[in-house]
Image (cartoon, rainbow, N blue to C red; front, side, top):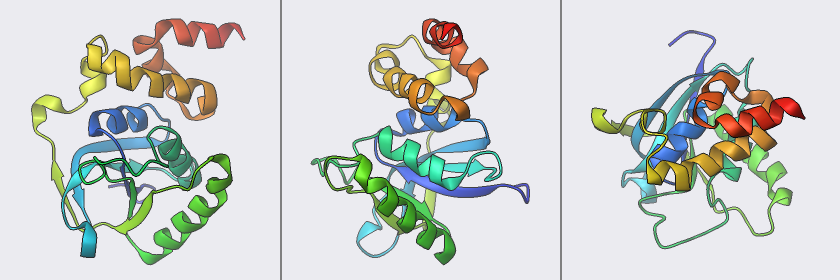
Length: 181
């Protein structure tokens, strides 16, 4: 990993969805899809991604905000063991930073955030056949139903940070609409 890059883990929903969201952002250099574990009560693996990014191009505040807005970050639904809502941090400074970000973001939501800050412990990658799932299969029903709406949200709410060329390929009508505004 380049010295300019840092990493953070994000979990909250299907890792196909989470992977596509972070792959669509400028400043993100790599997204590893799989399962992440933490410590104590979070040792079970949960679907997540590891995001390698350049904080000079996309700040951690923006990554966390995008994460909170692209999964059910206020829902303690029964699938939370498989889809733990979490930001996985690698050190104490990052943990403190994410705690401050979550506190500042809370007012944007009607209900309390359930997103946890957890220390990264272990990662198991997804099998090769499902990596880069959305960008390999944008016309599949799952992608159209669950992932495309998240990418549309990126285009409207976080447009400054999106990879316009990638999104024009998979969401052509939305990208054209943005250009005409």
